Length: 210
Image 1 (cartoon, rainbow, N blue to C red):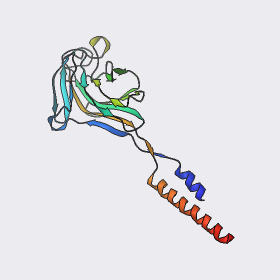
Image 2 (cartoon, one colour; image 1 turned 90 degrees about the vertical axis):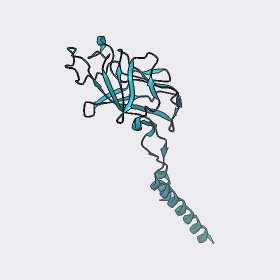
Image 3 (cartoon, one colour; image 1 turned 135 degrees about the vertical axis):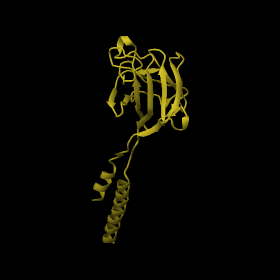
Image 4 (cartoon, one colour; image 1 turned 90 degrees about the horizontal axis):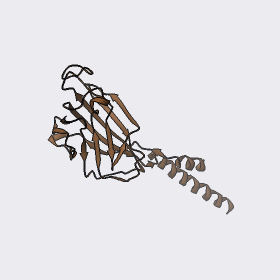
């Protein structure tokens, strides 16, 4: 029984992913996010808990540099952000001015100079927002030093809407890693019971020999 309990204890319990960064843009702060050097976003600011801006070209880019994010677990997991895009014109593809214009083509997450171009998922998350998730588990670096997000779609030629002039709102940006496996509290307790039980069996055997 003591051996069985010890074996059970050797099975680790995996905690949920570590939340390394959670940008929610409260208190009027952009939390370090700025317009990239291509300068295709105007009016970037934190407003009512969102990071907002207007694309002035078809390749709007946000950067966090230096990022200074260091993982706790053994590998990175995901970048997740929630975004809403509003069309500025009636372009024949989406509809009238002010209607939702979100399109996934042209969205980019770039970490330490490497563009993540696979492992994307998109899900409608209410009020015309979409939650975008990018898999960054292949990133080998322990620290993210520079970080770029192109939050809304590409140019007219490869997107359902012409991005230039469109307004965007980012509700949050989150970065997670894969948490280290740790024993559950119950497993630790069982380990203690196993140790005590084993010691008791040894004591009884010695007593019987005497």
